[in-house]
Length: 554
Image (cartoon, rainbow, N blue to C red; front, side, top):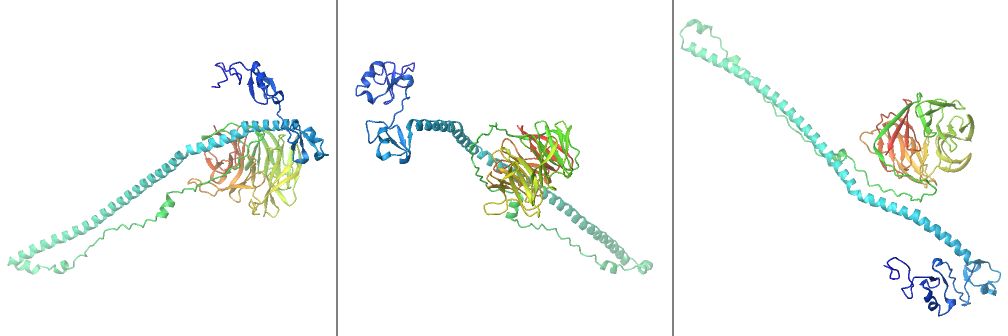
């Protein structure tokens, strides 16, 4: 407890330590009662600044001039590295013709900077560090549990192997029992045949002995020898036992067959303080995504979907019709492309006007009040996919006429602002072909491209520097090559990309780490994707012509 305060926390005089404070010395930073003011300034009034207590710390304390100690420095000389000077110094030959700043103005400006810095530190920077620390602490806290899950999964796989091995061994034992029964039957059959012959021999001996003792002429003469018949011995049967030939154990092969442990992956994320970015609450993934509704578009081949608002979507397929449906599946509007060819991609700008890319005319077109106008016309390149950014720029993927190069170009209106084509080693970022490379912008301003030809999601930062590539996730059930089609992002900076060959959606975090699949909801050949402002996912089923609305966040 402060010794200068009472039980009611009333400020007390710093000199007598009993009386209630009345004044304050702004130079010495002392609490003073009325009687103690006189004692405090007894060494010289000009050495102190007495103000009412409520106005404490309001007096600026100027530095004393080194050349004129009796004066305060009210100015800074701009031509002398902003050194403090007094009024006498400003009139001296040393500072003749120099420019001076009033210390009060500099002080007030710096105070504003300090005030802003304090606000930034308290409201933005410090909370961000706390968030990073919490995230690391949470990762450490969940470390054992995560590895326990891994070892449990391995143990389950081992148990499954043991069960399968026991099944195989029991099956082989059954086969041995069957072979044993056949072996026994063969031996028994031949034994029965031998015993039958032995019985005949015994009967023949009895007959011979009887004839030997007999004196009857007829029976002796009628005797027929069977020695030749019995001398032809039956073949000796030797049935060999079956053998078990164990195959040598290949430990490395067993290791690979049992499963795969992916290497430790450490991703370093650019930690940028959010600026003018709306705050969003954390939304976790649902354990099981839910199908909300299915919209039948009647396209034979449905390729694209983009959200107009919470209740309306634009769709495009391999026809010249671009259709707008409400969430109940009712057709609201149809736009026919100017070229009468199907659009490569569609998007909606900040004014809710429809944009579409037309490869046959090499144009990006805008539909405004029902009228179609050319927004961008390309030379030597054909537009692929479109994305309207958070700053209202337009990102366009395109490929060259000879289909050997691909790039991303940023436009402001019709003006080209940026081209993204090569990495730091001057190697192409994207595959060179005529496959449409779908594009989206993440909330951290990363530019994400689904490169079907390369079998990869390629992500660069807003300056065009490569951050990472994602080439699929090892899976027992997803055994076809990863070929991403459309791509989109949500409010949590998660990235979703369509894997039509494996009938699923891959969900990644902003650093390219795989989170989960969406592989339920009866998805068949998902191609086009978009996410609305409420994080509902819309998925095009290319051959069914359906758009499925899926809830995947809590």
